[in-house]
Image 1 (spheres, helix red, strand yellow):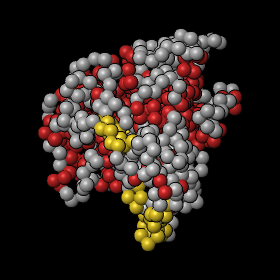
Image 2: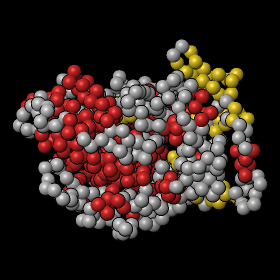
Image 3: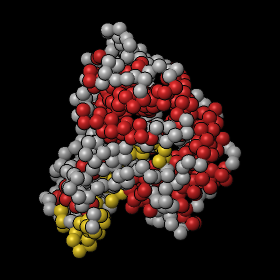
Image 4: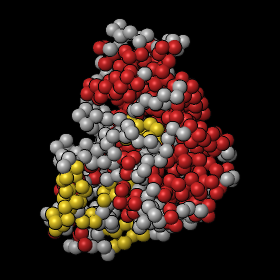
Length: 577
């Protein structure tokens, strides 16, 4: 079986070659590889057919306007400000301020990619005899990926169409289903796939434990998804993660950074990974998003740098100075050229060779230095050296154009431990065990500093250390100081003391920063007044609101135009003109 699914990885890469971009995807794969020219009883041939769906999953996660960016750019950790003298802006600002509408590329593209992937998975499922033992694992993989596409769309949009076959009449339009129906469908699909996987591992594909992680995520957020209350979801989530922990198949990686290297195939913490190929699958261009061109020299990278995204300053201030995850996740301060030793590049290693930044006076010159403070999202925006830069995912030095994160982990073991801790706290039992689990996850990032690594029940149940509140510096009209003008500070102070389980929310943020985790967490965690943190708190240039329709995105306008039966999500304009 391992040999067969090595061939699946080749198909994965091949699918990425034929599917050239997220907006120009080759939909003729089935003209070349379909029921007429493959043996549908042969698992190897079916694995090639499945490659198209898996390729779409990579695009969904990693594309320039893919799901990763939609989920991260609206959180309290990461943003893409307008860059004075550089550009950016547009929908990135709307995502930060939580005032998006139905015409945002970062939302439209994931919808299109996901439903294309669902169509490919449906085609595989249509072709397989469910009673054929020889192909049951191929069926499990197809159902797993189809369910993952639907899971992400359900999480982002909630009221989505469900289509389970491509054998439909011409003119067929899929119907939206209720959140309850979609939730049940997802539970049934992940459960069925889990039962057919057995105990085998398939790097880059699903397995029974990846299904358990997906189910745990559904159950953990059940009250959010279905508008319910109660503990049923937490009990079921707990059961799923307990099964993963009890299996003994996974353990924490020795270092935090080991979870974000180019190759995750040997990582004991990785449960479900989107693998890649440095030649064919290089969509995840975070280095281009984050860094100015000169800044990539700190990594020995030859990639293009467009100087866009950065950290929200309030988030950076939450880290304990002893927490290695700060340096492992964010680049700040003066930058130096990489030091080449053999085939390796030591980041910022050549302290005798600083990177010089030459720009207009209002952006600062001299040694390239990433400043913690950022003026604003758009008024005037961020100057060129403002904001810590994300380098959590490995940036490869050399002549390969600096591809980042060829492997992106979707589910990892630390998350199973943290979900168990959260369920125990919410259920009000074994709280000391919950604190021990969080401490276990923290320990590798605090070295010998046991006191700093240790979290108590009181810590986790207490408030957040995040200093929430609107917090920006605008430059007064007519000011000539520009880059050095910090005189006009617009701020409110809300703090985080009123967040229930705020300490746990902080720990989730530090551990899973910029892993498509934070939006779900901010929506799930509540303040004492009943609002969730997502809506109820301000940060940087985003203001608090009493409206909860921002919990889900607007259905893209082009989707509304294409399907007259679609209804727009509450709180957004119903117009599709």
